[in-house]
Amino acid sequence: MKESRNASIILHCHIPKTAGTTVSAGLRRSFEIFHLYHCHPDPVYILTREVLERLLEIYPALASISSHHLRSFPLSIRGRPTFLVTFLRKPEDAFISQLKYAQRRFSTFSPQVQRLWPKETPRLPLRELARQYLDLVVGDQDFCPQTRFFCSPSAMAKFGLHDGHGYGVNSYEIARSILQQFHFVGIVDEMKKSLELLTDRLAQRNVRVYFDTCGRQNCSPEKAKPTWMTLDDDVGRRVLQASKSDLLLYHHFRDALLASHEELRKRCWLGFKPATADAIEAFKGRGLHEAERSLVNSGRLFWRRQGLGCTRAHNLDWELSSEVLEERVARAFAEKAQRRMAEKLVQSE
Image (tube, rainbow, N blue to C red; front, side, top):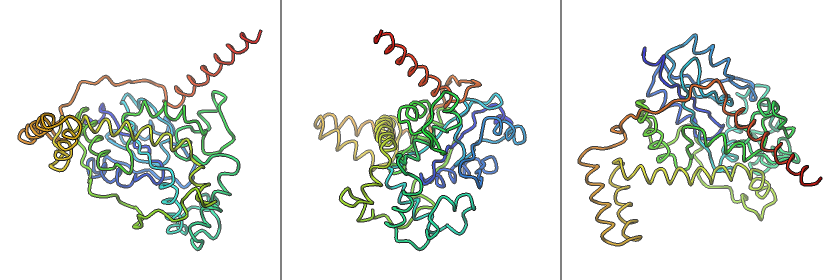
């Protein structure tokens, strides 16, 4: 693993309840002892660049890290470029998953975490738990845990950006700008496509990973959405309306992922089912000739065995910058706001 000392290091920024256990298990399968799953009892603790540098000094062959606390996004660590990965989830699905997880595991939570939940969490009906939890954590602000995950209060405060929330700032614009500079943003309810794309992106950088795309780990067995999760129910309405920024992020990056996967299917063999679906879609859109072209292309990929593992590595330029991504974006956002204010002052004179 000597080459790992100069290779990129994968930072899997694990938003709670976004299938991170599945992603981490794939990284563990791929890199074995050179993958680290980091935990910390304090829910607002952040793995800073300085902590990551000390970690790599001790463990220089480390290939990947997964953590809920990777909320600072350095572009390089000890001369190694980072490969930033995260997954987003539909806000109401993540919220319900979080409630069910809390009910199952409440007794194992640290005291710091238990204080964030109603005392009767394990015994409350799900709807009542949702109501009480929102009363505790939301107040007069939007919930938006996925948006706030990327806008840590310490980084935002350096540039005068804050909204009084201890977990992070609710700014769709800042979070979107940060994520647009990530190397990969997956979508939980498109997990198979997400893992196929992530495998391809890493193969382009000569990194081989092996994910199980057949299912998710550490997920609730119940798939049906609660009947009260509607705009007609007062608690359901609060849940649906509490994470507007999260929903905007989800739709923006889901559309981007699906478009990227369409391109991937044109150059990689992903199986007979996707090939058939592509041919049917081509026939519906442009007729028989386009369907034939789709089948010919699928046949060529199949006979060449041009699957995900065959993606050629590219000579990509890595950014070895001392900056952390969230501060770069927050600085640009604050400077833009200052220019707007100056322009308004000039216009009012």
